[in-house]
Length: 119
Image 1 (cartoon, rainbow, N blue to C red):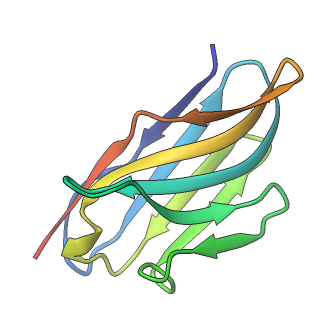
Image 2: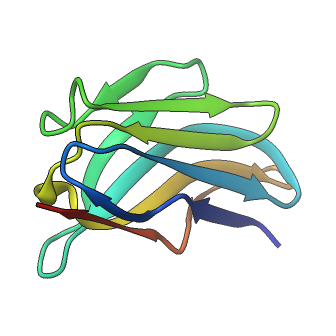
């Protein structure tokens, strides 16, 4: 069974930092793009950061210069380092990956991890 499991969320004061991690497990042949999304109550899920298999990255304007996405292809993990956090960063953060399982590519989501930033 293929899973994406996030960790590292929590409560932090404005200006603080958190590091989210996501690990993909199961019979994975290849991993394509990996991304972090977030969703606050009443809002649509928003793309936060993207990293390709080659390491190219892209960020939402709201997090540029504060968040850094990285991946370890040997460990099948993707991290999101979040600095200078703001109350508006409060949301549930989800890991997303395109995985090749037994020859077929598919889209996979983690269960999410809550990030709360207090003012």
